[in-house]
Length: 109
Image (cartoon, rainbow, N blue to C red):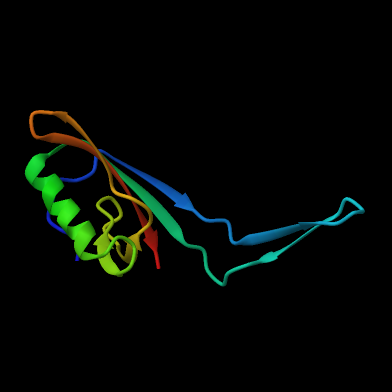
């Protein structure tokens, strides 16, 4: 379960394209679905995340072993719960007195 921390400043959503494209020598392009469903990826970004919230998020990331374990996350705008895992690194930059700019990606499973 996602930790209780302040809401992200921005949420960027990417909907993956499940198509495979094959270009033929004749110039034709053949396509087919690679997957049976389309996954979503969210990039969550915080501007000036307070230190306590940052440490809570970092500890959660470490406890989930990066992208190894699945957890539930409720989209703060849609209010829909998804099963997700981390996709990539937790990136944090210290900005000022106990504040961090943080970015992390979540991948629907």
